[in-house]
Length: 175
Image (spheres, rainbow, N blue to C red):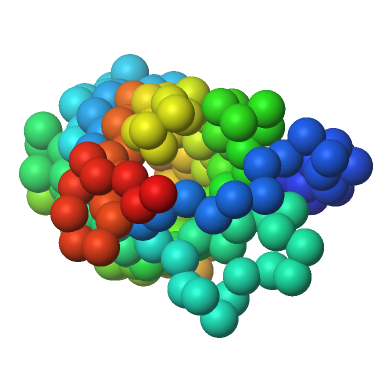
């Protein structure tokens, strides 16, 4: 399904913004294990979303954005990860970003996901303000892709806020 969405967005490329935004520090909180009441709890996330100059696509339709992050829950679960988002910006304000990450998970006193290596796939939808700040929702699925003895997975829905970083200083846009 994500592949179909990806190709549909390519067809809409003429509405995409061609400018590269700065790096971001992102804060998020929301519901962990949204679809299963038994283990549902609060989660908090922090991510650093950056870009690499040498990885910019020549047509600037998609913005490849590596990320590194930490997630923890109220029950002591922890997930540290590395990943990538593909940022798309429609009409200068609507930010859409499918993404993937892999990392280390420990359940604490929360839900056991069956293996310490877990994979996250999800999508962000946000409003990008004219000063590059972003406010949006991130829905993702976390599972071990059946490499563990069990693979219950979990889904999260979080509200995130991206703060632009320019030349090492937050809240300042490079003109």
